[in-house]
Length: 422
Image (cartoon, rainbow, N blue to C red; front, side, top):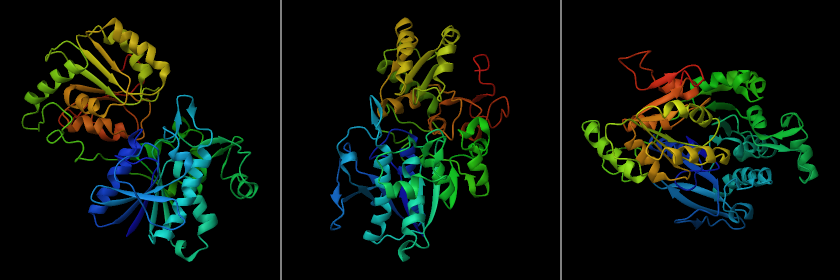
């Protein structure tokens, strides 16, 4: 079997979130099962390392490798290579993202025949690749090379849909063929994700619980009806983590490696290292709570801030690390300034610090108000750090609450999304 793997970010080449982790790890795992895999991603300005021309005449295409020499083909265009951010800058998302990722989608399909890679399945991830199933059906399927190719579209987070104003500067013929169509129409806007749901042969999402949740109004983000119409072609497959990357026994980013045999002793050393790193008082007996993730409403930052007056009465320490909505930066900094012996805040993307938090914290806070899958809770378990989560999506699929099953418990879970239950 051959699979073309299409994603807007792939670890370790480019990363803004969990999509990159899955896009980097899953193809390697599939390859180890004997499946032939090729990956396709835009060539961003930030890409470094051994990148070479693909050697295809008349085609702006380069390539590199990940894992055990898996080919990653990089679609070149000035709109990718001339900008520092993948999707936007400090002012917000790039206004021409629909063009950028539309071009990427078309060229990815075009490249398949040029390089002679004829996949059985094209596996697309999130709205950035949403036009691939559409363009395959409308433009490429008539060619013999593409006749039998099927598409699998994975929704990592339904809230991110590729939603745009009616594009006035799109070529009229393209606009008529694609955008002037009910498959894209969404309250007088263009919705890439909606079109992918309708046109893909099969749809998956990242946990069984989330696959059920998105059929309901509360979690459907306006697309619950579209998804319900395709529920017989929708399934939830739980994400996993890369055990080569997330392994406390071999992790070079933590102070002291450890395993299940010496976890209690060695985690204490990592805890003290983390306390030094973030300038908290050294105290191996005080509980240390960590947060690693996007600073956003979805990830539960509102609930943490609302709960801080009560939480800070506890004899505990708190380390919060991540980037995201700057609306939350000021109150987080104020708590850290007011309680420097209890709260440390690092508003930056820092892979090393993330590893140190997983290794040094006693518990991981993950009070997401919704969570399609989540990887942090799985990583924390791998490092012997107990997750504290809200009962939703992939968190409900992976965390067993101590009050529910004390013999198999691996974390703490609360069921009502409020300060008291948290």
